[in-house]
Length: 185
Image 1 (cartoon, rainbow, N blue to C red):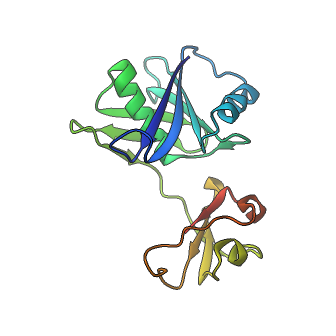
Image 2: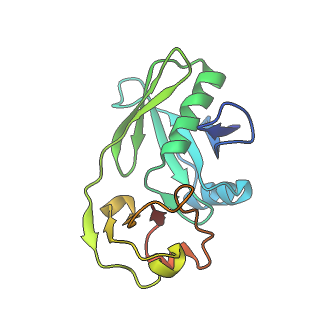
Image 3: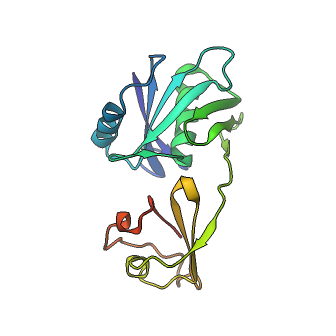
């Protein structure tokens, strides 16, 4: 296994959004428990595991994302980090096709200037009742809340932007109590 630590959305180390990227040598996925343990050891919000797929497959690479406790259905910054790692370690350029377990084939376009564009499905949203603990977690009452179905996001629409920029919650309570992977504000 070839491991890379990549800071997405950054132009220098130790800034941006970090992810561990594990380029697997095997044609089979390791056990889920092992991948969760690796993600736990890294302690980043997500650790990506990728393996090359056979020629003629619908995609070039299989991809899975793990948080320390669960498998994640979709993760943009970790996918971007994976494209960067494949470019650096394997010389892969242009468009990369990833086969994901929950979202089908995802496209990532690596551009000559080093930028990466992700082509992900737009999940359907549905308005939901305000979860009991969300106002306490955010420190304000959202105007409305939505879920993204299988993706597992909870979207909160706030009345207006806080002075000086968007709110940066300190999560006084666990976002896991919201029955979603975490709120998107």
